Length: 310
Ligand code: CP
Image 1 (cartoon, helix red, strand yellow):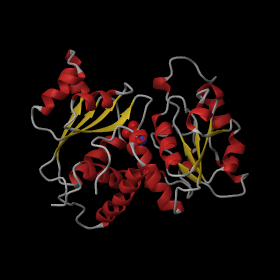
Image 2 (tube, rainbow, N blue to C red):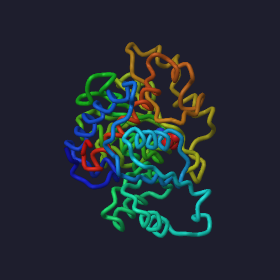
Image 3 (cartoon, rainbow, N blue to C red):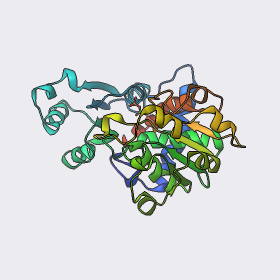
């Protein structure tokens, strides 16, 4: 099995078949992860560098675990302890790492397009985008899709609501691309100041600024963190005001006469976009998303590595 691309830069570049191939392959890796011995040697002889220029808990640990489960050799790179702090450029850093014979680069960067830049300069190395600025977070969208299918049976025809800071969210963009390609209906909700003006026309999603109406419409609600680190001006009055208008809380869900699936990519700002009694409720699949991330990332790396089982 092969993908139509040598890199995973974004969902935008994937075909519907690529997405199905990754999600189907991830089912097999999820089965591997249930075994007493959770390892397969599919990436034996492959060296992967995890290049994280921006903080991460879930994505970094998940990729590293996926690499180890596949038998790859892994190198972890943190900018704070590297020569980047002495002014070395991204390309010089990566060329030096590649001189040590690295086969795959997993990169998170605060600049949108950073992994695309690497892919242009290093066409023979598989580049995986682990989140670039406000552009895309493709493996998050893939693990979200995997989790929706696992919980509800399918993506096709599913009504998925994405709530919150749509403007600054790479999770929102990757999810919208994926869900639309796979036949879901997508609605976005949040403060007008955090909503891109032409999003309905540009991406083919519905927009509903009234959270209660939006929640009443959906089968699945994916709730986003307020990305304060990417906001360079005040875009809403206070976190308390945000919680009152757009926080997902039990009282709001109780008023809806159906049970919706609650998702969040993490990290959660509890009491801001999501209250604890919802985040920790039986409706929430937040920790299943994290669990599924390992199988999905194993599938991505296995397929980009050539799909060979040793
Ligand atoms: N979901 C996600 O990207 O989380 P981290 O920032 O902790 O990797």
